[in-house]
View 1 (cartoon, rainbow, N blue to C red):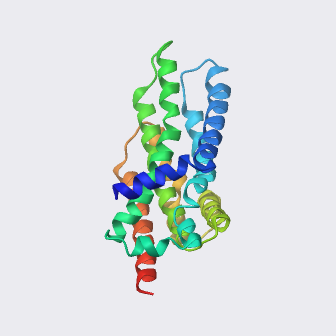
View 2 (cartoon, rainbow, N blue to C red):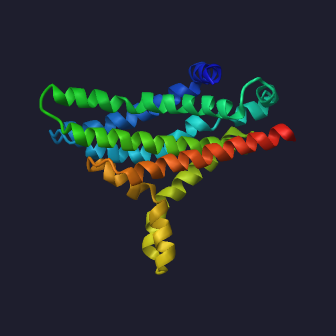
Length: 234
């Protein structure tokens, strides 16, 4: 697993992908920090994190689009499948690399908190809730994006698929408000990433919401392993 993790991290920084992701993420994070915290002269970072929720939905496909599809395209997947490591270790190595890049991106919010702490006292509980929520969101989206990447050798298709899935998750709330069916509405509300993310933004660590995001991770990591398992036997 560690060898795969190191390989993927090296690939991020020997290709434009890692730099493009960080540049886009830092640009928007800085833009919203300046516009919603510095200019209004406030210590509240809630608007920054709310904006990063949307940004993460759109930029995470940059990280996940090549995780599996690149090996399929270059035919190096066969070497990985026959390597003396378990499929779970293979998948987790790639997944943790994408997650590490995501954490490097969102860590800029800690720098913002430290800047605020120089002049005032931030609400650390609220900040911790925001950060944990954003991290769990990234965990779930990375797992979904990696699964989609395992289904195609085309990186553009993988990115578009992950983007479409992210967009669908954003639209669940709107669709829920349009349906009159109580059961369907309950299901949609239960699948809404936004509703599960909201409690974190209020400084509350809800076990239900933590389990939701971790369950999404587990399901899509399991599906990715199954895809590789099927490919190994074929």
